[in-house]
Amino acid sequence: MNFGSGHGCHYSEGSVSGLPGVDLNRNYPVDYGTEEGNSDPCAQNFAGSGPLSERETQAYSDFVSSHQSDLKFIINFHSFGNQFIWPMNGKSPNDLEQKAPGLLAIFRSISQKAPFPSGYGFGNSYEVLHQQIGGDADDYVTTKFGIPAVTAELGTESDYGSDHFSCNSNLQAFHVTNSNQYWVNYIFKTLPEISQALKNKPAKSESSSTSSSSERSDKYRYDYSSSSGSYIQHKMLDTNLEEENPQSNMHKGLE
Ligand SMILES: [Zn+2]
Image (cartoon, rainbow, N blue to C red; front, side, top):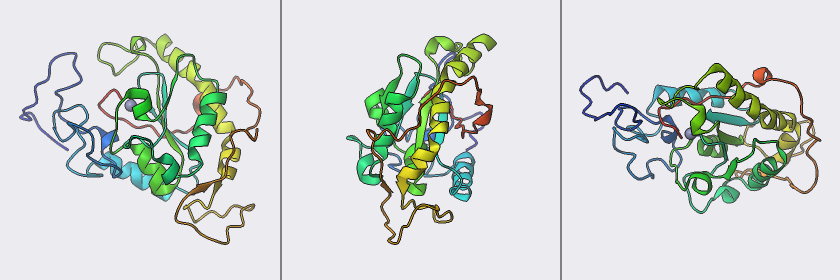
């Protein structure tokens, strides 16, 4: 969306409100436009002129759609807040269990077993931020494609400069990424178990060698027990994030 200079928004230096533009993480077609104030083009959480109205969200949707049989788990990286946020974000109470039975157990297990930096918050956006987010990317990916998708808010406010868009220093950037690599690696290494738990997944192109899904359900079914100990033992590894290829989601807002 191009506003040009005469957009009529009132921006004050150092603020993140009053800038024209679309909050891409409000632009997806699940519970679209349900958030208060997000029809205001000057608002930080402006949802756009309609679902998937933006080229960026269209491109993201197209990418996930065309790679859905290869994508096992999607982490959208945001900043900041030290939070691990799972769907559904547009509804309170969370209706994830109705939309994707069993998936909540997977996210909860990750939150309990993965080595997050201390002080992390876990839950959907209402539980973590007291905010119902309509048009969220994770809600869309999870329900449309059956791919588990979460958002990680990396770092704390003090990690970032006054413009809120960059780290204070290279060292600070290293600290944020380094302290978050371990839980990312945990998810990466438990992907076989998570994928195994996903049965009757809507992504039709890949038929797992172990699955014998004679019946096909429109509802996603995840057979997963967080107490079964099926997660492999996590080892702290001296690896870096290069082996990961998470989808990053750029947007103008902080959260
Ligand atoms: Zn965010």
